[in-house]
Each structure stands twice: as structure tokens, then as C-alpha cells.
Image 1 (cartoon, rainbow, N blue to C red):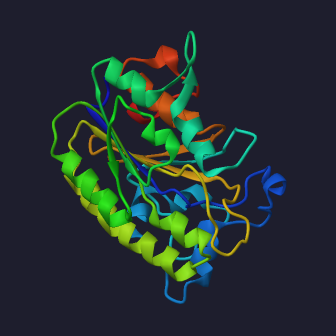
Image 2 (cartoon, helix red, strand yellow):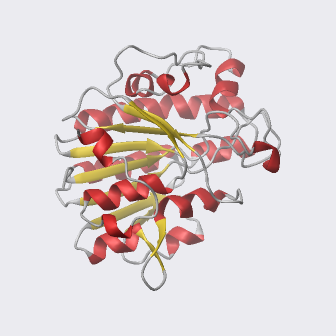
Length: 274
């Protein structure tokens, strides 16, 4: 086991620009983070995410206010949704579902069966409500979600905590750029405290399961999604490239806890532990 605990924060709604198949989903030109940055009258200031490497994901097309830095502390890349549909639950299922020997199973059920704790917090879609093996918390705001995450930082149990931030989806649906920018700024602040409180054997993964560009009428939008990974024991990161499926996140979690044989995607665990 490389990491004792893994914390996954889902910035659900934050995209990084149109995916190659954007034309199939009325998303040509979509760029959630880029459009919010240029539409926001104040400079977008996300120091925690920038230090983790968010700006380094797009060195060819820098995000105003979140430019690349020389030595990011995190590992950084982007995810592409592999599934052929684009509903809100599509990416969520892709990230955490896999085909078992006899049926479709989930990471959220496999870890408890192996003796590891799993906690889920978010604005519950039906998919999360069915994960009865996990401890579940319903939250209505990013602040509530981070409060749950803070509580779990002080619990010693080995396992996974997955937290979905709801404010980006709401802002995207309502095409409210200001609310989206404010949610990003506050989430960056909360994330700094999470990063500070991580133990040496903890892994933080920041990602997203869908995009919601508030400047585009289509919702959700088909975009590349962020992938950032950080551990205090590995303070210098590097690029993880473009991952062809969100299932790489679930595969990484499974491999960390010795369940790699069940994975659907390609784990990046060895890329952040070498």
C-alpha cells in the first residue's frame, strides 16, 4: 500500500476546454475555466490549484490568472470521458464502475469488502445513494462538502473519502459566471487547508466528473477534465498526460489498496510513486 488514505475532491462542473468529440454534444468552443477567467472582471486567483499544477495542464493555452509555474508540487494531467453519452452521472459512473467477474461492481463497494473505509459526500445522484457499503453524507454547498472532508482528515481509518462539490454545477446551469468564479476562489482557499492537514502517507486527488461552462447554453459540456494528485511525501510533481478514461482514477485507488486486478482503467499510481 503506497498511501494509507486517499481523498478525492470532485470539482464537478470544472472543465478545461472542448474534448475531441465536443461536436457530438453541442460543446464546440466550450472552455469552462478559460471562459470564467476571461469573463471575470477581477483576476482569477487560485494559488493552491496553481501550485498543484493546474496551469501546467494547459501550457499551450494558458488560463488567465492561473499560468504555468516552474515547479508544481502536484502531478497534473487531463481526463477524457470515454463513454458515448454526456449526462451528469456519466463521468461519475465511469470513474468508479468496473466489470467484475460476474457483474458490474464499484470501487465504493469493493474497498469495504476488502476491509477499507469509504465515505461519500455530495449532492446525491441516485448512483451515490445506492452505495450502501459506504458511509454517505448529503451536502448542499461546497462549504458543507469541505467540512465533511476536514472531519475525515482527523480520522485514522485507512481508505477512501470522495467529496463532490455542488456549487459549480449550480453556477453552470444558471449561466452565472460570477458565482462560478467565487466558488472557485473559495474552494481554492478550502483546499489549501486540506493540503496543509494531509499526513505523509495521504494522497489528495483533485478532479472533475463533468464540465458545466456557464457561458455555453448546453449543459453539461463535453470537455477535458482536470487531474491533480498530491502527497506531502512527494513534494515535486510532473505531467501525467492525457488519460483516455476517467476510470484511471478508480484504477489508481484500487491498485493502491491491493485490488488492481479488478480495475477498468489504467492506474497512474506508479507514475506518482517512482
